Structure formats: structure tokens, C-alpha cells
Image 1: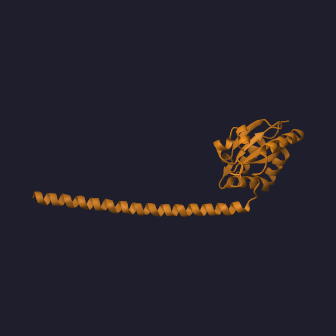
Image 2: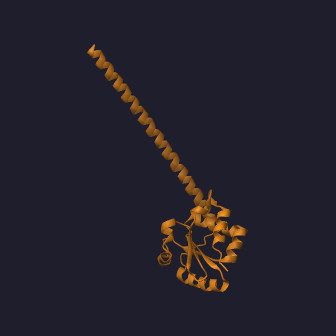
Image 3: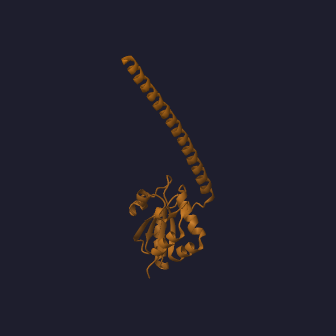
Length: 189
């Protein structure tokens, strides 16, 4: 009777153990399939972004002397009573290029920008990180990513830093969000 009981318990243990192994093997196979599917989806997304990026204008100039350019903008802003909108980022950044395209191709936004701001694309890239200029404004790219917006008044005084993720909507930017942002920082007369 003891032998029968022991044999029964051993058989039950082996059956349970083999079932667990089978389930873990199936789980591993499922996880591998998910990883492959995720990798494929990620590659497709990167490919699509690269294609989109290749069609968009590249407004950032890594060779520009940003310090000197901003000084000139301040002098011009005083004369024209405009604020300065600095869009910091680079031609490597799909969201930077999307924002530029969004504003340039939307008549309502372009009108607001052209009337109230001198607009500057401050480059951040391996070619030119503009570290001195970014340090002057508290290195907002380190805190918020890119693009990030630096708003200066007509005297060159920093009046606002705006992160861009709050302006996003779907795979682009929201018209009302961007419009509200610009209108909030028009020069006060």
C-alpha cells in the first residue's frame, strides 16, 4: 500500500512538473514572438519617421553663431516692438521639424508669429551644441527635451520657457494649444 501511495505521489509530481515546464516553454515562445513583433513595429515606425523627416524643411543651421544672431535679433526686436521666439532643437528631431512645418503651413499661426515675434531656430546637435547660449537660459533642453521654446522680450530678457509636449496632439501639434501659447507671449503694449 505504501509503494502504491509513493508511486502515485511521484507520478503526480512528475506530471505537474512536466506541465509547468510545458507552460513555461509556451510562455517563452509567446514572449519571443511579442519581442519580434515589437521590434518589427519599432523598425517600421523608425522607417516611417525617417521618410517623413526627409520631406520636411531643415530650419536649423549648425554653423550659425547663435550668440551673435540673438544679439542682432534683440536690436531688431527693440525697433519693431516684437518678442523673440527661440525654437531650440535640431534637424535630427522629428518633433522639431513637425512643429516648424505646422507653424509655417498654417496661415493663422504664421500671421500671429510674423506680427508678434522674431523667430529663431537655435541649433542643438553634435555639430554645434551651443552650450554657452543654452547655459544662459538654464539648459532647458536638458530638462524638457526638444523642441523647447525660449521666449525673450524685446530687450532680450528671458520671459518664458515652454516645453513642447503639452502642445502635442496625436502625431503632431494641436492648433488651439499652439495658438494659445503664441498669444500668451505676444508683446505687451
